[in-house]
Image 1 (cartoon, one colour):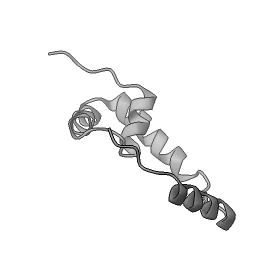
Image 2 (cartoon, rainbow, N blue to C red; image 1 turned 180 degrees about the horizontal axis):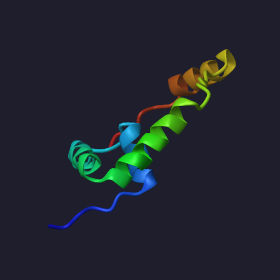
Image 3 (cartoon, rainbow, N blue to C red; image 1 turned 135 degrees about the vertical axis):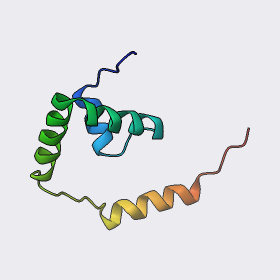
Length: 78
């Protein structure tokens, strides 16, 4: 049987739900079997949980400019 080697980046994609359904199933199975992978996963989850929660929102001027631009451009058809 061939085992997939997962990186920290793979774990982060899994944590942030950026993996495909198949990748998620495979990763979940690997986490159950590989103690070291599970430890790294837990460390990343804990690290993420202590990051400050930041939200961004555009200024009203930015939104107005985007909407104006959108209203003045035409949709190109193939």
